[in-house]
Image (cartoon, rainbow, N blue to C red; front, side, top):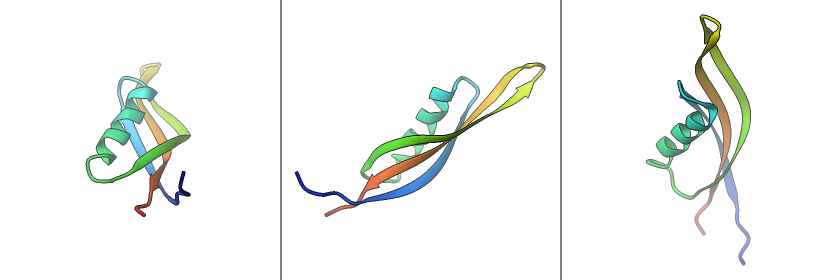
Amino acid sequence: MSNHVYKQIELTGSSTQSTDDAIRTALERASKTLRNLDWFEVTETRGRIENGTVAHWQVTLKVGMRLDE
């Protein structure tokens, strides 16, 4: 097994459905233009309230991208 080096970036995904959907939205969009996405860590969760209920979720992630050899 070789040693890897990673670059970290920060992404924020949003969804009206759930935090899981916000995470998927961010990762799916990032994977269209970035290579070697390897791991993520949720660092922040926010939401917007309308009429006493959650109207929108925002989730901020740290994402690790494995650098090419």
